[in-house]
Structure formats: C-alpha cells, structure tokens
Amino acid sequence: MLNKLDIEPPLDVGVLCERLGEQRGRPIRLMPYPLEVPGPFGCWIATGSADYIFFQQETTKSHQDHIILHELGHMLADHHPGGDAEPADFLRGPAPGLDGDAVHRALRRTSYDEAHEWEAETVATIILEWASVLNYTIPRRADDDDVRRVQGALGDHQGWL
Image (tube, rainbow, N blue to C red; front, side):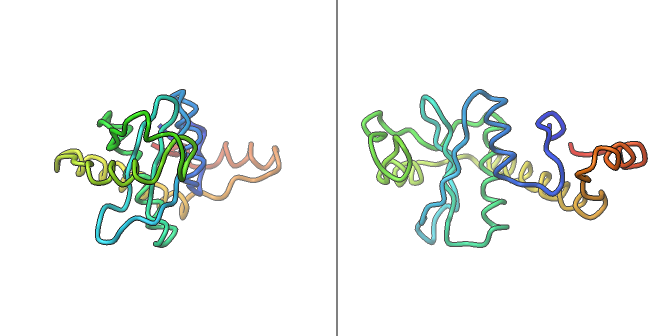
C-alpha cells in the first residue's frame, strides 16, 4: 500500500494522509483538537466532500501519529465513520463546515465494536512498526540522481508494505 502511495522512510503521517486522500478522491484533513480527558483520543468524521481526523492536541507527536494511523485504520478497513452529524452542524467551527458541537456529538456517538477497534489498532501498529524498522535499516534517499540509482541497485528492495 505505501509503495503505491510513493511513501518513503522516514514516515510522515501528514504526507501519508495527503496521498491516501488523493488516491481515495477525498481529502483527509488532520485536525488537532482539545479532546476531553478521559475520553477518546481521536475520531474520524466523514462529510460529503472530505474526511476529518480529529486527534488529541495535548499529547506527544508520536502519540498523535499513532492516533491518526488508528483512525486511518478504520478508513482502510471500511468501517463506518464515527460522525453522524446533521448538515446544519457543518456550518461553522474548528474546520470549514464543522462546528465544535458536531465534533463532541460524534465523539460521544463513536461506538466501534471491539473487533473494529482491534483491527484499526493493528493497522496503526503494523504501519508504525514497519516504518520504525525501515528507518533504521534503509539509508535515507539521496538527493543526487546518480547516487539514488546506486542505492536502488544495491539497496533493500523489500520497501514498504
């Protein structure tokens, strides 16, 4: 999957979302948000024109990446999005077309079963573990075309998933 999206180590979750959105024909908007604690760390909300991933802004970058990848896991597994806000909910707010109340209602209504949560978490973990391995085993891609050709001829051809 990551090869088809032309994603290279080191993994940039924002670039992954951008490319996946292009492939799906629906932009994926990443929305840091002050989510209540305790509570969910993230939520995927689908509108008519875009997918929004809200994630806890009050945590580390690595945790945010994991939250985002978990929500992508729901998308990739064809789960239904957590949001079911009414059209009037998408008139103003933290993102174009979303209001804060719509986000909070979606977070309260998110009720994936354990199998869906396990599946999404597995997707996130596999992507992060694979990225971690490749970050340590594959040399950074060179800027020079000649050096890249040599790297391609001599390098690891396993690449991404």
